Length: 112
Image 1 (cartoon, rainbow, N blue to C red):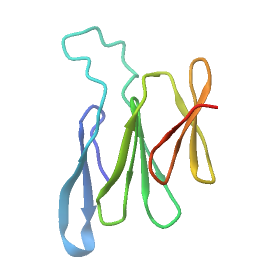
Image 2 (tube, rainbow, N blue to C red):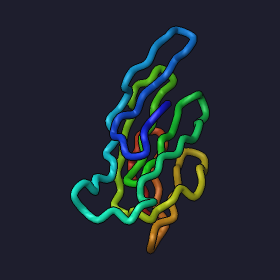
Image 3 (cartoon, helix red, strand yellow):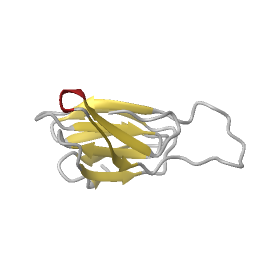
Image 4 (cartoon, one colour):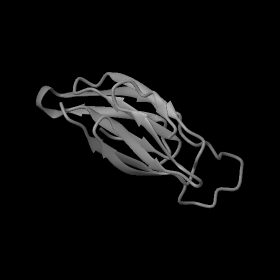
């Protein structure tokens, strides 16, 4: 998977079959026309059991299957939140005030 630092487009690349296609449009942070202190845009990829890919970015996360289909996408409102750990079927984040998570199967939010 490929994504630019600020791009909403998420691209899948399958070199063995010569395929390149946009697989999702991420709900990215948009600071156009506003003060941008830098460092807020980020994208990380985590491989999940079964070959799916978890895409973690500044405003949320998305799950992509090995064929490049978007399984789900969720957003959150905590810019400073970082992925803490993948624990079984939950992606746990450390937010500014509390820990929160999302079910990996369907993206449902969890607030302990």
